[in-house]
Length: 291
Image 1 (cartoon, rainbow, N blue to C red):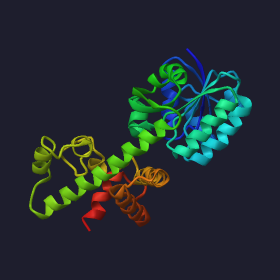
Image 2: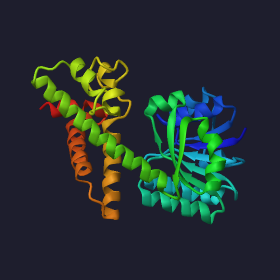
Image 3: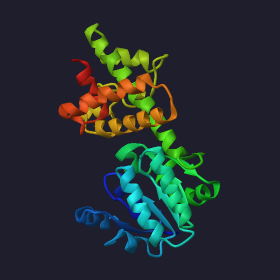
Image 4: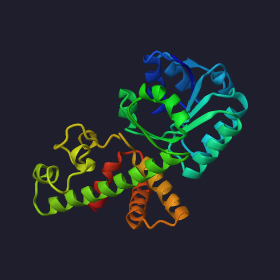
């Protein structure tokens, strides 16, 4: 079992660190919030007063932070305090360019590194069933895999530095687009007199089937575990979907890729967020699409 430092212990990082403890690892954590540090102590994470204190003696460091700027700030500090050979794993969802810069910081410090954004939301973080999309060297991936397996059920090596972030934003662009399509179809079905169950029974077993219908149906009833049955309490907040769609658009602009549906999805979620719904589940956008 390893000694692991975990930086960023919010809604995702907290339960992920707790699962590392459950797997038998010794985990030292740091977060800017004293309240969060107190909460994670109950799960067996040892609170630290600084990044440097958390990293001291750690064989691996996991970061879970809101933005690329935060990751680069923390990784700049890690590059100065982590001993050579330490494994640095970033599980944040950030822009590809920032991810590659983080890898450069790690390389200059003599550390192995991975960008490993996750899919699965807060429920997956708590249950230890996240999917990890990893970018980095074969050696870094091999060392990180046992750590990641304590927090998730599927770990995919997507390629070299930044490939994990690329896979994440492409996947979530698909998700954002497909959810809007599903919401439009259910809103149309309502206007045409179709019951939610009837449309679900057809679409979930024919050519319209997709995760947004079969697992996360945006109307109450057909899928009992979907947020629609709990007043759209977020499993994945609309503001986070907007963040990922914006990252996808930034990447598309930089790469010269045409993503017209991704751009439209970003605009619609931006409008939904500006209407004050960013804290609701992203599937709640059906309410806006109903007009």
